[in-house]
Structures are given as structure tokens and as C-alpha cells.
Length: 124
Image (cartoon, rainbow, N blue to C red):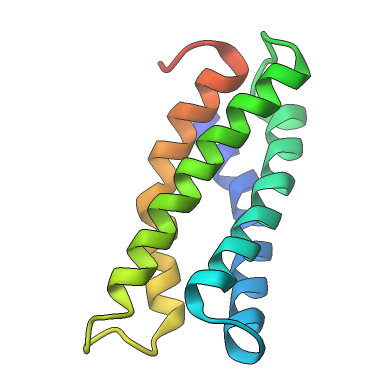
């Protein structure tokens, strides 16, 4: 049940991330820069949703936020790397919706277990 709630809250933050990414990549920046900006906005939204609705806070908010920040930066790094390499693929280049979906799906489980550690001091 927790993964379903996590997926729902993450979906909202991901929707913001995804829409912002599409706007930024279409009108303003390269895919990598767009992902760094949109993923950061999604990260902040996600933290507050997870703190309120998903995990039982067993650390101070400050420590949970710092750990969550590092976890999110790791996730952003992973997703940005995926985006960078998939944009080099002739088959996928230019299909930003597909590329972003692949990157987001890949990072989902990493984020769940690492965020659980950030909030609850446990992985399982």
C-alpha cells in the first residue's frame, strides 16, 4: 500500500516535473539543463508530499530533508545521464516524452527505497 501512495504522490510531482521539462526543452534550454531544472522543482514538491502523506518521520525534518536532497540529487543524476545517452540514440532522439518516461520509470524504485531510509531510517 505504501508504494501505491508513494506512486500517487510521486505522480503529482512527476507531472509537474514532466510538464515543466517539456516547456523548458521546447522553448528555452537543452534537454539536460531542462531536466536539471524540472527535476529540482519536482524534488521539492515530492519532499513535502512524502513528509505529509507517505512516510512516518523518524528523524528531524532538517536531517530528513538533507538526506532526501542527496537522494534526489542522485536520482536527478541518474535520470539526467539516461536522458543524455538516450538523446544520442537515433531511434529515440527527438522523442522527449518517451525519453523522460524511461528516465522517470528507471529512477522510481531507487527513490522509493532511499527516501524511505531518509524519513524512516530503514529500507524495507
